[in-house]
Length: 179
Image (cartoon, rainbow, N blue to C red):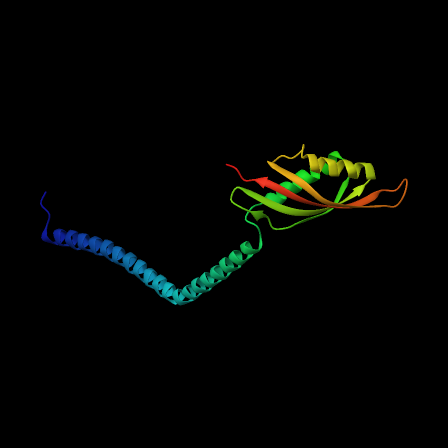
């Protein structure tokens, strides 16, 4: 079967139209993506100065926070021994049936191998229990850490028989900072 020139011309035009439609569709899609990318670029360029300013503000805030942290660190001892001593003091007070009403600690002093911290400890309880507490501090039996305490002063207030007493105990805690 032989096709006429008209049919070949129609087939050729149809193929050309299909190829043209596919290429137009592909080009339109690419043009749409390009337009979207250009829009995104414009938005990003508009946001860049704002984000740069925010970054600089954040860096300034970081520098201020770091400076504040450094100055705060200078005010506090580098060790957390006073917290650990406090845990032991509460345990000893509980064992002796006295109530700790205050703990005031000074900044530790000493060297790389040992430190000395001064404490003022306020307690409430029966006078005999308070004396047991002072003795337990002096003996250091219940200490969890390698430290010992020297009781430097005890002030007891006692209201009479049948009433509880209060005491303020001053002590120095010596700690070994071994490996």
